[in-house]
Image 1 (spheres, one colour):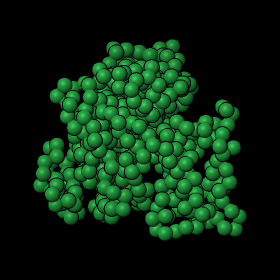
Image 2 (image 1 turned 135 degrees about the vertical axis):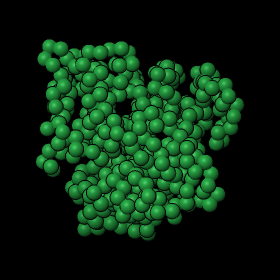
Image 3 (image 1 turned 30 degrees about the vertical axis):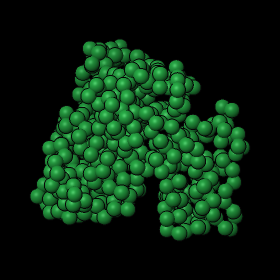
Image 4 (image 1 turned 180 degrees about the vertical axis):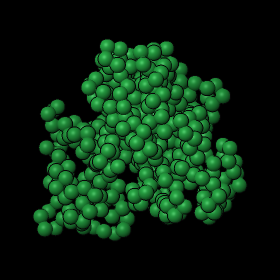
Length: 215
Length: 215
């Protein structure tokens, strides 16, 4: 199947299509031309066609896109019609926030287990879960099907967690640990490097000054 | 200055260099060849040279890179040697987590104000701040210099906040609101779309199945 892989750039745009189509639906817009959609999203109409053609033919010449249909198709493509069992590893500030994030549940993402190593936290409630001992992670994964593990531990603890997840067949990692994880090919990892993002912003804020200085 | 702009791809790699060099320093490695660094970071040595050449000449033929020096230079390039006054707008789960994120303070990012519209929250403590009324944001910005506003409000409230920030000369926006903000050219915005990231992961988890179905 490798030759059919969709490019990363296209994959990254899919959630954006989904967001824009959701907005259109919220505004009761049921039909949009590729030109209008292109203007709204600031990408060319031919790019939109190309992107969507990876998955089939969704637009009709002279009609444009049927918004509810396309929204539903992209939902399917993104895997949002399935339920996703998630666990959280690491109940720090970010982990705690994610575990309580309301819109996940609405979209079928459900935290079925929450883990930490801090004895003061273990046994406490977080959302619909009691915080469990990280040492029980392996055992938990034997009994419970988990698709996605949210890793929100400090960076030097992350690789050990990945090992346990890999052995127990967890396929997806959503990584907030600020570490670049070495994961087996059978797994997929999506990284959220918060400090990288903030540093990109500070760079931009003083780019003129920096370029004057270094060039 | 426009012709000298550094490409987005390079800018996005800078924090990554900074992270890797920080790791080397933590492991007391003071010198690294471009070949070794390239292997560690999984990008070509010539790419590294090209990236860094945007800002000057940091490597020495036959010696490689002096890690502490390069780390310090990239720190400067990223604007991390300056202090950054931040405000938080929106004390939900994510906003609360960001306001308490320890590593920001260490790097010179300081929350000088925290705002929400919820009367139950206004006046309560969050980190080193008392939560203020969002209606006082304009007044606050007249009196206090702010470089970066962290926007963590629901998406339909975000554009109004941006207006207030723009009028009052705030240059940087770190956007967690899940909205695509329309910002004036004088401002810079870095988006963290958490649900986009999660959807990218769920797509990957069932990509084989989807491609079989649609192709």
